[in-house]
Amino acid sequence: MLVLEYKVKAKPQQYQAIDEAIRTVQFIRNKAIRYWMDAPQDVKINRFALNKYSTELRNEFNFVKDLNSMAVQASAERGWLAISRFYDNCKSSKLGKKGYPKFQKDNRSVEYKTSGWSLHPTKRRITITDKKGIAELRLLGKWDIHTYPVKSIKRVRLIRRANGYYCQFCVDVECIDIQPLTGNEIGLDVGLESFCTDSNGHQEPNPKFLRSSEADIKHAQRQIYKKHKGSSNRRKARTKFSKKHLRVNRQRTEHAKKLARHVCKSNDLVAYEDLKVANMLKNHCLAKSISDASWYQFRQWLEYFATKFGKLAVAVPPHYTSQECSQCKRVVKKALSTRTHVCVCGCNLHRDENAAINILLKAKSRGGHPQSKASGVGTATLLGATLVEQVLTLNEESLWL
Image (cartoon, rainbow, N blue to C red; front, side, top):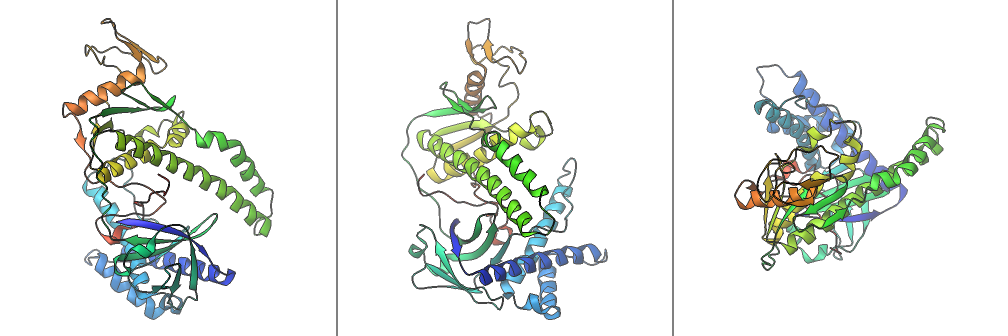
């Protein structure tokens, strides 16, 4: 699957129609969650039951009927996605909260399947054909959607962001670009002092996008509370604040994407730590810095480009990678503040370089496991094996990479 994204150019009334469609999607999803909550214990609620319930909503509410029937089904499937995730967490005995489905209040997208839309012959305009009044939208961007047949477009999604509206096309094509072998192997150790250190001793600087923009973000946030609630000035201040967060998010994504692509293209084997980032965020002293580094996003792009280029990405357990000597395998215990690894065998390396070498050695000794089902992260939607689960991540790449 490939997701191509365009920015949408339209009239103000068309933007209002898109917002109305987005609110309708949120209404259907929340009603599906409530239907599941209120169902008797002897009644089995599954995906098909929610689809049938969405048809009842179309007959009951005119504003739901105005939305395309397949878009209504896709909205109900979003509710089932939350329910099924909760069931899976319960079955797997996940520690902590199981993710009980909650009602949504900040939905930002509406999704159409194979109907409810039509492309202009030039493939630079799209017409939404339901009764919401969205009509024809201009598509701004450099993606070559015209090179793909219309039948390969499985989903169309309209998204509202802080800086405007976007249209995404989910295209059913194989994203494979086998690269020639280089004979190189590399181990990567991520950190906060430097974004990552490889087994060759190279250290990638940590860009710290959030830290560098934190003063502007805090100033923009203070401006919100200086405006009266419900006023247009407060709405403008919130938009300005959202744009600053959106910029940081895009900077992180492009940095992780560019670095992961370069690493996978230059090496046949890429070894990295199998970190549980969600658990590490429980450390309130380092949570902001860890989130700013976006280690998990970098890992996802590594796995995606390794699959695309025909390379091997191996996740290695992180235990003792920093404490163990990469030459003699002695355990040299050191505090987190100790940045140099010094062993009695004469090995004197930077702590992260020593860890990166250990990660590579563990991967070559089959201590890790290759990632075969990898997908990169782009904005905020999901591409999985089934089209039902398209809500969280995207296989999306920049043209200049």
